[in-house]
Image (spheres, rainbow, N blue to C red):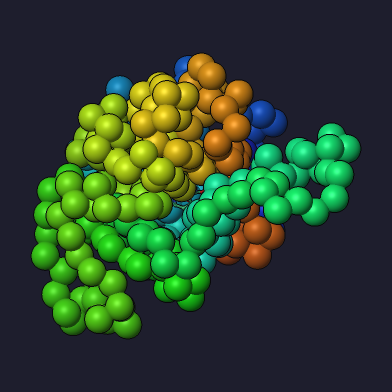
Length: 329
Ligand SMILES: NC(=O)C1=CN([C@@H]2O[C@H](COP(=O)(O)OP(=O)(O)OC[C@H]3O[C@@H](n4cnc5c(N)ncnc54)[C@H](O)[C@@H]3O)[C@@H](O)[C@H]2O)C=CC1
Ligand SMILES: O=CC(=O)O
């Protein structure tokens, strides 16, 4: 019972129970700012810190941290400098898989919601402006037959492809944009013959819906910038459930304003919780507050995985979902 865990924000059951079965647990009353988190990590009082994706664990913080590990309550770990963690002998864990379907549901919801103008339609009814069926009221666009372009072809992209095929969409993908990586027939698995790999430039030019499913890192930051937006079809819609900074959000707002592209469905923002100037006023957007994994069952599974990672690290074992590996002494 010598283990000690720092939890930066309370997590659902059974996470805290699993941690307290294995040691002493400190849950911070409110999300810590950078300085507070750095001081707590440097205090030597905690074996493992259980972080949220807004907790910045950068190289200077990790250099001074006296912890064995960081367990991130998320599959994405762009908030952690993993290279620095490895250098300082700090293990990192994440929560892959359990949130794949829920996040793909949100990608599909954004595709349907932008295509069928759901926010505008809802507002019209609530504003008392629905005066009865009209032949040309709020005409949207068809999803069936439209081309869905997937940037990335990992877990969430594949789950989105599965849904899109069910809706009769044509699915193209580019596995590691902006570069290329051939995906073998074998690797395509259930998708062989159903989806097609194309180079990034072709994906951008051909997609009616371009949906982003890459992690945020140095190669993917601003993957979609003004130049890429300018090469999309004027009636195309951008969907982002990955990370905000994968898109240059100011350039996106401008492109939506001036009709370079037709719409955007966003679950993530470049500087959360702030939005780029003007984005919230644009009617051709569906904007969600980063709720890709937000179901009761999924958050509970994420809590379980992040706690299991934390306990394993504290006890000197390899976590069930490691992001890095340390060289053996
Ligand atoms: N909106 C939300 O609430 C959620 C957002 N996410 C985001 O979705 C991302 C994808 O999650 P998964 O599909 O589970 O990940 P994954 O690791 O299964 O798939 C990532 C894909 O991106 C590709 N990729 C392209 N460029 C890359 C690069 N430069 N470096 C590394 N990989 C590159 C990989 O090859 C792979 O096909 C997460 O990293 C996270 O940022 C994940 C869960 C919920
Ligand atoms: O954005 C959420 C994640 O799990 O990553």
